Image (cartoon, rainbow, N blue to C red; front, side, top):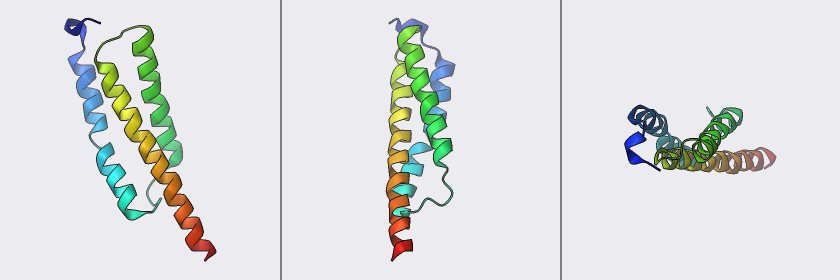
Length: 95
């Protein structure tokens, strides 16, 4: 792992993409609603971040892998909140 070979532009891209996830997580947690969310989109983005981690592990290991991993974790949390919120919505509908 050579810190001199880190792509500043790749890191900036991942930071910019990841900047929105904390807000999305808080909104999902507080609203307890799936309105405006697409679980398919979340899964596709999650797979993308995991693929980025795999690429970094296999071909280009550098510290940017931690940004991919952090983003993947945040998307996974949002997927879990989507599932929780969907359960709440189904319970409310059944009541």
